[in-house]
Length: 134
Image 1 (cartoon, rainbow, N blue to C red):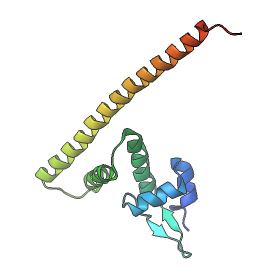
Image 2: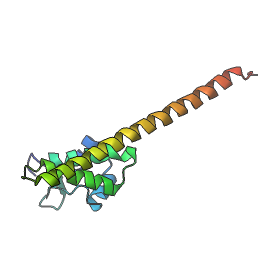
Image 3: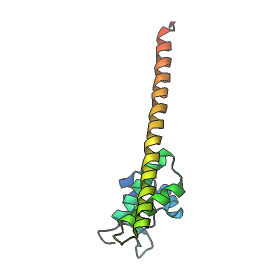
Image 4: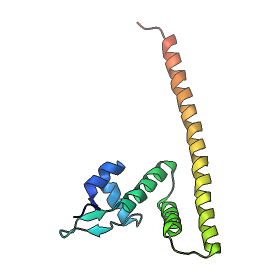
């Protein structure tokens, strides 16, 4: 194994994802190990870790595996250094902007949910202080 590659355990520690989750994302085609060791072990590079981090950040916002794949594919195409026709480049950029807008909306929705949950917890705590203890 060369120093550019990591085994799945190190990737799991760096990404705070379980081995099972990383394997699931591989099966779903979201991240494919860059290499295999002579013994057949999965080997991941920095680009693979970066992809997993994108997935890890999208998951709590409720994005589907297909949406994750679409964003990863769009960013990968733009980052490839390949000359893209302006129409395709614009389409990819708009797709990423759409994901950014969706993420912002989902974050706002989560903030609303959190505020309601905190209000509920506070109401319960207040109610408990009014109940006489024996």
